[in-house]
Image 1 (tube, rainbow, N blue to C red):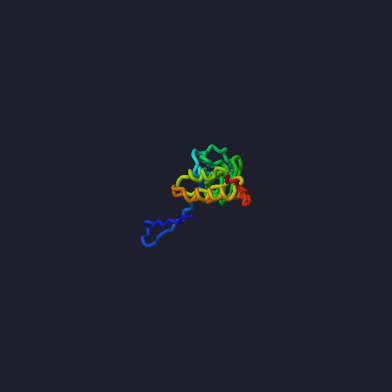
Image 2: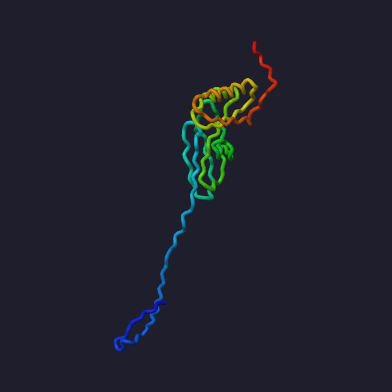
Length: 174
């Protein structure tokens, strides 16, 4: 309701107040707010190649694509939410529903027989090297020596959880 004051012409000192009631109806369509979207990106984590990011509306389940990445001396072993492999692991083909933007890092393993050579080939940066297979104390020394002697300013997190270390293995030195 609006009140409008309009002075009358007959009496300058007196004012007449007119109340004007106005009713107005308007229809407005309020659009639905846009739904949040989340993007999952794939980091080769020292490997070569690319995998296209996936962007979906919040609440939508995604499927992790098959791996097309490569890394000399290493085998692809899945994905992890942390670059140092301390997060949640996923396999290619797994499904999950992201609740935020997320980067999945390629997980690489090195065969125990070739791990020292694989470490020597690493380029500068932080790497988690997961060793799979059986190693003895001599191979362990070769691995440590490869880490120490790598000249590419690497930081290596050595994951031996998939490894059996044999201490009593007899080695023929002759």
